[in-house]
View 1 (cartoon, rainbow, N blue to C red):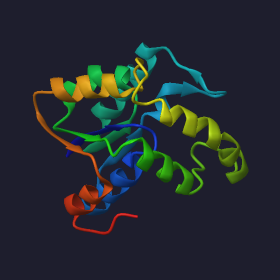
View 2: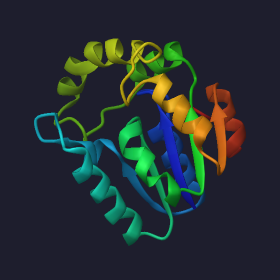
View 3: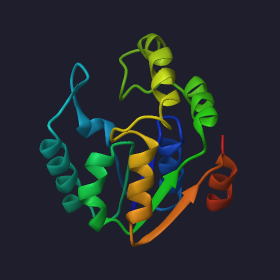
Length: 167
């Protein structure tokens, strides 16, 4: 298994990754971990990509998930399956509002909650942005990928794909 999960923040990438790993053990990499330095400063792209390649080289089976088209594009040749989670902005906002505390990203639940409104504004701009985080770049990556791929545009499809409940 060598899967990349691509989509907007709140689309369900992390949750789907965890559910896939429940079915088949593999290493998991959230691109959030390699994209930023402490203090939320974006790392140079070459550093991030090099770290992802080190991860790929170290693991025979893996899931990589994120919204960073600029990091994903150069590693696509290593991918066996690309899954584009595209449930729409409304679903992503609802997921963001209901997500549990993410201690790998925030020191406290309060710190995560303080960031929520900025995250929701960012998520809402998904369809109009022209950067590596936006729908246009995600769509171009997905459409141009010649390998096995699927686009899931409704969280109920995640359930069908896994044969288990989606929450």
